[in-house]
Every structure is written in C-alpha cells, then in structure tokens.
Image 1 (cartoon, rainbow, N blue to C red):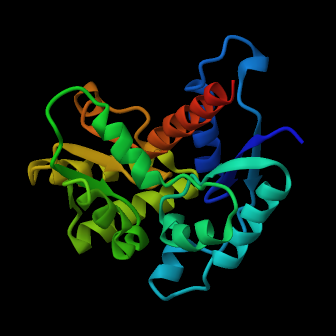
Image 2 (image 1 turned 90 degrees about the horizontal axis):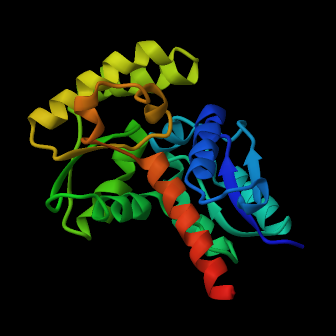
Length: 239
C-alpha cells in the first residue's frame, strides 16, 4: 500500500476544502505526479467541538478516533486535522494513533518563527469560544514566550462566534466585517500579529485590505505549509 497523507476533516466541509487547496498550492510540484498522495476523511457528522467543550453537547472524540483509524487503515503515514477546536482532543488522538498527528498550534509557531521582522511576543487570537476555553493556543504558545490576547467575552460572542456561524451557513461576506472589527480591537490592544485560529475565519478574511495582510497569520495555511514541509523532508530523507 502506497503511503498517503491523511486529512481528518469535515469540521466543517468548507474549511476542509480550504485546507486541501492550500496544501496543494504549497506543494512544490510541476506535474500531477509530483503532488502528495492524499486521503481525506470528510465526515461532517462529527459532534460540535465548541458545544462539547462548553458542556452543551457530546464529545466528538469517538468520531475523531474512528476517522483517524480509517486514515491509518487506508495507508496514512501522518495526519493533519484542519479544525483548530478539535485540537483540544489532540493528546487523546495521538495516544491512540500509531502515526504522527501534526498539531496546528505548533504549525502556527513554526510559521511565526519564519516570518521576516522582529520577534513576535504578543499575538491576537481569533478562535472559537471552545478553543479559548480549552486554552491550548495560550499554553502552547506561552512555551515559546508568545502571549495571546483574546477578545472580551461580549465581542467574542457578538463578533467572532457570530462570524463563524455565518461562514458555516455560507454567508461569508457578512462575516468579514465582524471579524475585521474584532481584529482591530486586538491590534489596538497591542497584538503584533493576529492568528486566524478557526478554520472558518480565513475563508471570510481571504479578501481583505492590504493593510491587514502582514498582520494576519492564517492557521490553516500554516498547517498546510508545515504538512507539506513534513512530508517532503521525510521523502528526501528516505531517498
């Protein structure tokens, strides 16, 4: 069985498609045959991650484990999970998996360290309320000396979560203004970069004024680029 790159998706389907596009665009390929063999598990019926963390819904872990097993059983040698909030269960998934599962926050730090300019000590974080409560972004980046600024609770509900819901329903244009307002507040509070830490958010902010482009760090893109780098480095070492 030929090794493949596994994508544990469906959270939501549009976010999975966005990751796959970025994964392909960041692959150094000149022909179809140069691209990375990929297997996508895109099952949207995984229970809501934020609802589970907030105590308002069942855990998605059984379905996440089932999806990971599907990928392993069908030849995956590494897995990326294009859902930020689902990384609350990363430790449990990795403990049950015989292959590596790349962590999106490690990918974000990897991307931050490769950007030009002075070191970044304070970042703003646009993410779901579940991710903020779980705290894995804050704790994992703090290990590298990076402090996370997050929206005030009212703005988190009124701007960020409202925007995420709009994207999931297909109202991308309506979500953009809400997210820019939330980002502006974080920048005013001293954020040197703003992490787009929910896979729905980069979809809404794909087309923004140039002034924001150097400030935003797309976690989906960071995971895609780190995934390609991981795969190509292993292939070169195997050669």
